[in-house]
Image (tube, rainbow, N blue to C red):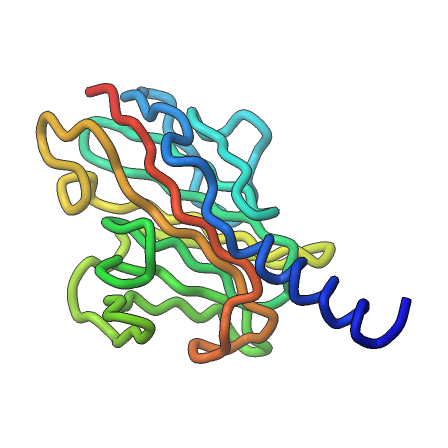
Length: 181
């Protein structure tokens, strides 16, 4: 392989990792089995599990809480955005495990940028980093993202390679999840 072929293969890999997952990625159903928000994502802890661009997304929905888990092969940041399959328009939860303490921000995506929000704080969250993977679990008020009778939930998931709120993602995926209420 020459330098040009290696460069083209690297570009193809990066572009492939950023391609969105198929439009419908499963159906979320109400459950009474509540996940434990502790930063450790169990194999059957979430009622819906989806693989997206090398990341594992877990979702559970109770009568009043939306539980979200994301685990990714990175020691940098992970993010889940709700309300859009792209960063633009999504309420984003971005977190990483820092050297002194875990960091989490709630931000609103606008175009290719995002800014801090004073609303939509999680009821509970946990971050962990182990064996080269960063995991984030969130408990969110379901009514903030799912209206009565709503049939789908748009999400975007992403990961970066640094402990930073401003570094670019190295993988992302947009998803549409069905909702059975």
